[in-house]
Image (tube, rainbow, N blue to C red):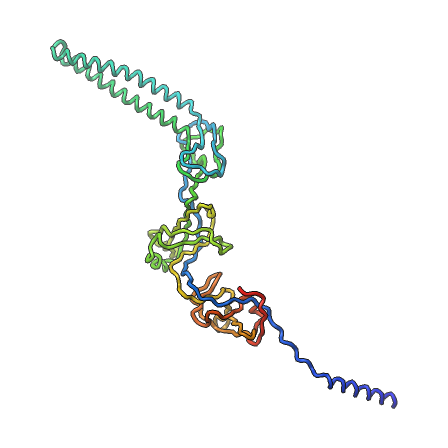
Length: 363
């Protein structure tokens, strides 16, 4: 009985202590988020596409005469100017041919002078009837024949000189050389399919890309060489180069429904390289006073697109918005937001309409 009495007293004491301590209300947990301020600014209306860099000019350098390649005067990948020496083919056979042609010309010109002298002498004799007209015509015909032979010899000399000049292979344009395909010591021929080297002109340079035919009317309305084009790397939004639209193809590709365009870039800093794939942005016009938010702020739900707006008391509001256009960087809002409001750009998955937020940093 004594034991039961003490147990009852202890239980009553514990109960009284528990009733005297009020329960603490659990604190609301703040969700850490990243936010950005809704901006109003002029936004360019752009057409984006994937383009490929092309050299403005490409030249395959081939030999024009047969012979042994004796010298290479440049390094692979070197920039060359128009007229720079590239290769030398052994010139000795062609020098000998030129000397022979010159000697033949000298002989035949001497014969021509003698034939013309004889024709002139017989011209005086025929006037005095010392010789017959037939004899005179024979000498004039001989002089004419010698004149023709000398003309053919001069052509042979020029041809030999031209063949000799082909032994000295020079760059036809300014550009950058590629891999040397044929090295010194090899025999080259005019009909070889493999070029000695390929030269690309990369400053300036083209970027070729295609856009849907539905946008052709907008582009043509602005005109070629007026619309600016920005080239960016595919893994970054930073601009590599700024250029101008310079070419619209003369037909739409019926199989794809696209039109081919080309933009020209000065490329003085060599930021663009032939064969490189880039993202191009063709700017059609500016959209004034557009309301923009970062693209990652826009979410998609069952009722459409929405954003979380941060209020003054750090609570959030789930607000539907209408999007005019969007890319990887920003979205243009036509309805639902006003400039200066704050929207959540990261951390939306943990938010509910009753959540409080803790701002980590603002964009």
